[in-house]
Amino acid sequence: MAVFILRHARGEDLSRAEAAFAVEGLATRAVLASTSDGGCVPGDLGGVDGLVVIGGAPEDGPCGPPGPDAGARGAEVALLRAALAAEVPVLGVREGAELLAVAAGGSAAPGPDEGAGWDEVGVTPAAASDPLFAGAAGRQRVPRSPLASLRLPDGAVVLASCDRDPVRAFRVGGSAWGVRFHADAWLEHVLGRFAALVAARAERTATRTFFTRRADAWEERFAYQTPAYEAAVARMRLGPGRRAVDLGCGTGRAMPALRALVGPTGSVLGIDVTHAMLVAAARHGRTRHGGLLTADCTRLPLPTASVHGIFSAGLLDHLPAPRAALREWARVSATGGELLLFHPSGRAERAARHGLSPSPDDLLAEPNLRAALHCAGWRLTEYEDDRHSFIAHATLRSPRATR
Image (cartoon, rainbow, N blue to C red; front, side):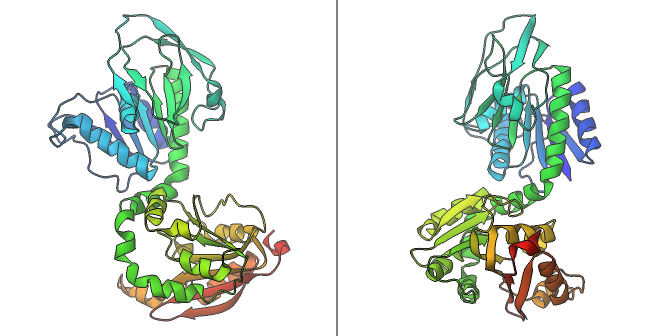
């Protein structure tokens, strides 16, 4: 796990950040932006679990492409936009917070320099439930510094303010924060909580980063697999009026076939942790067949015993805690509910792509999968693993078995 730190000056803020991430076992890569010594803004977020921007870039510099967003500032805004799209955790400190506001769709304009002095900064009521600010002291006396006048994007939440400036800290969505103060106690608190959040979300962040930059081309790239998806869904015994869920749905290729099974009186829901994939699914018309929901498949926002069929392609063995996922899928399923695990190629073929043979320790090997399903309350009823497809079909024994 690694955190990328884009900084504009050497100083205590960088040392605090590196120390906070070290506590969580996170490696850091700190780059001095807008210099000619190799410290240019990276072009993508591959392998990055969190992003910190300390300070702000000048309008022009050597690190960015020409155009209206020329220079280091434009390159940083582009990187922040990519992080926001993939829900990579972001922390903007001081001028970095202003760049974050711009990247999220707000604006920053020069503000008046009111000279030396102190500001009394207090947290807002929203801070009490915020992942980073919960538990922070109610007020801090902070040294006055020049501040830009910010217009936050729609939906942003103000977390701290003062009489001179109503936006001293804010959150955009559920993964990006801007902090515009030097208060030692608050900054230590926020950095520590941000580091813990980055560590806890690392698996989901890696998934979202990988799929976000591939979402636009995913449907066209794998369109040839659609008949295999349709054939797999047809193995399910869902009848009209039932509720079906496609977990890890991607662009929703299974949703039309699921809709055909449950009919107009049933319901279909596609769930994926990567918002960009669901945007692509909507663009390809999947909302004609059911709803789309961004959610973690190991913590489903669904009532207990509310689902009659779960279809999941190429997901289970890539999860950090697959057995916990099977228990969660059992929780939301009604007694007798179906689970169909699918992949459009078999285990041997997938292993051969990497020059390997199928491992006996593979979760999807029949003995291992049967045992994992049984412990979660499922009964394996069909298992097929050939060159062209993998299918495991299970039914839920009883709600009691999932406890």
